[in-house]
Each structure stands twice: as structure tokens, then as C-alpha cells.
Image (cartoon, rainbow, N blue to C red; front, top):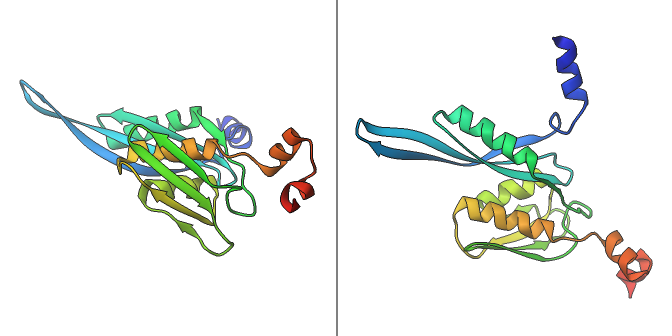
Length: 173
């Protein structure tokens, strides 16, 4: 059995992904016999090096809901291009009524973001960024809008390759 556990830790991304609980909501369903409580958890997973994912899990127990959310988050991971600890350019994200704006920041600024956005950006490995949630403050929508904004980012290398120019020419004129 120890041999199987070793293989799990060595292979796959699951071993290096960290998780953060963004939101936990207790939901009551009123039935003939009284109230039945269940929990909905929103979780963000990331490796701190540009990989990020989010998930939603619902269950009767808190721990089960979080476990389901983590499993869901690992299914939809995306890569985020990072440039010297920040993002390469400004980006907007929108999901339902949640709208976010993220801007690159100078080294040493830190993550200037609140709540759900901060969790997403920190798990992605962004160290310096200015962010603003402009629409709904619902954690589900803010997380999804932030991930949409991060998914829309393009790396300078990719842009230079598409334009057929060197990186030096891309930055210097």
C-alpha cells in the first residue's frame, strides 16, 4: 500500500496543488420532517506557478463538500502566463453580474485585491497585481470572472511569435 501512495505523490499534478476555501454556504431545505441542512463549498486550487482551477461541491457534511469541490477544481485547470511575479497586461473578466479588472503592478506592490479575487490570484502565483471587483460581490461569480480574466491573458512570447517579431522589438518599439 505504501508503494501506491508513493506513486500518487510522484506522478500527476494533484500532489503539488494547494487548495483554498473561498466560500462555504449552509443551505436549508424545509421538508415535512423539519429542516435538512447541506453545505455548498467554492474552492480554488493552484500550484503557485501559474496553474489555477476552481470548483463547487455540495454535500451534507462540510468535509465532503470541500472534497467534492477540490475534485471538481482539479478537473478544470488553466495555465496563467506570469511575467516577473505579475501579469503581462491589463485584463477584464465577466461572469454573470460579476465583473473584475486586473492590472500588472510594480515589484513589491503585493496583491491588492479583496476576498475571492485575492484567493484566486494568490493560488495562481501572482505576487504583484492591482485588482478591482466592479460588479457583484457573490463569491461564485467573482471567482469565475477572475479566472475568465486570467484565461484571457497572453504571454509576450506568444504575441511576438504571432506577430513574427522578436521579443526585443515587441517591448522596445
